[in-house]
Length: 483
Image 1 (cartoon, helix red, strand yellow):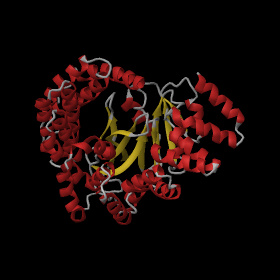
Image 2 (cartoon, rainbow, N blue to C red; image 1 turned 30 degrees about the horizontal axis):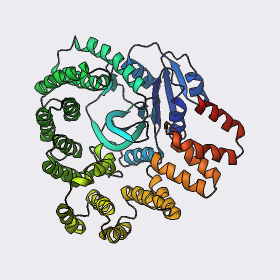
Image 3 (tube, rainbow, N blue to C red; image 1 turned 90 degrees about the horizontal axis):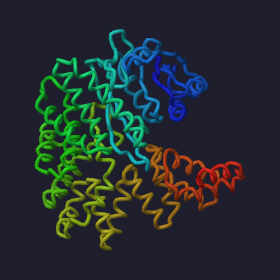
Image 4 (cartoon, helix red, strand yellow; image 1 turned 135 degrees about the vertical axis):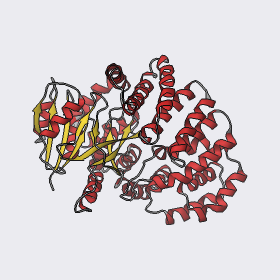
């Protein structure tokens, strides 16, 4: 079965090599539509064997639809230039399309991991980026374009997105988007379409509020309109629940906890036990210094987050972005639990086997030099030996105790499913550096340094390059760092 990759671009020479390298060998063709590049984008695309077409700019949907017209595959997977596709994620897609003689859905909603400068996932969004190559399937919308299709399934397939790493880029895009949104909404009469545009206004205002507080006020005003117009039977629950998180953040910024709780409770009516909303409610209560109630919701969050781990079965799912922050959340709330509360969690851990509550126990015991730490740690190492969450924890734990062999063992297991994790790549690089295995150290240092501006890594990286005789590269790098 032929599968096409489709991409629209303009002046993307910085991002393009990363994307195209990740697509090579996976698709039968890569169709690129260029809308006016003046840099090396077209040249780079041709170097990677892409079919390149030029198109005058007439909006995002128009460019996407032109790309579709040039695709020959039965399925088309759309990408942005600042995306990256990992091998395991493409394999998930292949498993799905091979599971049916005739797939009952016309399109697939997938998930986008939005990375920050530190290599951590800032958030997870979703969009329909994959669809069958049918004449009736088109993209609509000059901005925040989307596939106009009814039969959609959501699958736990992820792409990496690096476009949120630079604040100035986000602000520029948001300002451009705001003008387009203001133009588009003027002529809309359909409440469903207005509802969607309200969502994108909220998203745009949330970004612009980093620079100017007046946009926080605008977000709250349009957020209330967003609530009023929502019709659960006709409108997309995903948009509503995500929109509520923007509204919650706007109220939190002004310490308006009463309205923040009201907004998150509306989201919880749609998805009672979605971890993101349980987590958000806990965060509001924590900010309002209602710590006992906050702890109750943090524990509820842990209980339901277990259903949203990486490696989920190939069924229609919702994905939680807060699950990616478990370690940060745990450190934040650790000191607010009493010994009695911890004892109660410990009493039930074998029965529940909730990995996030267990992690809370381990961190609490470690911080308080509790004799139960080693006993629990050894049990967990056996029970959850192949669990990706604990693989990362074990890799860090052993590295900090200079047990490099054990650390490397767990790090390599973890990287099989999360090859771009900056923390673990850095650990592996440092272990190889300690072992004087400079060839492998270089590989992992460079994985760590992709879109990562942690200056502390560079001395060891430079020494690695020196050991490999890369004097010219060292000289160039030192000049860059000096500037």
